[in-house]
Image (cartoon, rainbow, N blue to C red; front, side):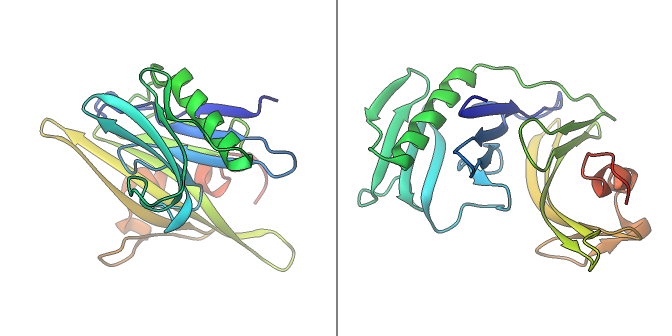
Length: 236
């Protein structure tokens, strides 16, 4: 298995363009594989699976647009552009050049691997997801990501946790939901949290009342089976 694998995520026809294709970075480090994901519409940082935003302490890997030039900065702290941060490496994706060579050690090696992967895939065309389609992406990742297109929105479901019963069967699954809505006036993006149980689903946001049952958007209700099975076909 290659040390780093990039798995592209789909985009719907109406989605806003991205600096680099959205997707998941799987880094095989001995017995401790690392999985990061990037969609620059939601965050310029590469995020761990359970994150909706980068944690306040590093390392932080950031992809950003400098007047049309795609740059990649890696630092040990949350503010990638601060002068007093310990820099792990600074790289220009567009030209495949280092502004500051990666440091020695494991974090420098990881920085170099991410930079090389970004450059290799920066020009890729994301796989299309037509209205009404659902894609389950599970290459080299313990928990698949589930993507659904409604015609005016693209939803990504990233499982972040699950609850077990005493017999070790799954009682509930918890997802971060990333939604891009688009239309003639452009795109907007927001996040939600979703709990999936055998008997119900609960959608919550930072503001507003939780939604469940018939109050849920029909698209989410229709995805209950695939979300409950996490993209896999096992009983329960």
